[in-house]
Amino acid sequence: MSTKQKRRCAMVDQSACVACGYCVKVCPKAAISIFKGVYAWVDDSLCIGCGKCQKVCPASVITVEVKEREEALV
Image (cartoon, rainbow, N blue to C red; front, top):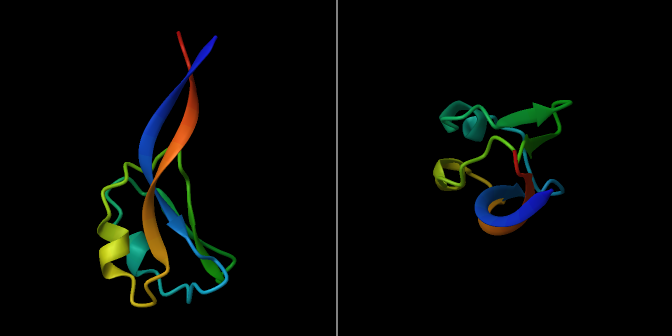
């Protein structure tokens, strides 16, 4: 059984990301990594949607959006 929950999560425009790594350094939950040196990738199961990554991104390619996610009920 599961339930849908809305939560904030960072999203990266991977086609415009310059893989500078600033977002990785400021993420308090280690939810962001640089994929193959090409772009930032966000693990939405770890992201808390705080927006710190969005604020430091020099290319302005990170947005924080509300996403719907299914969570299992225990």
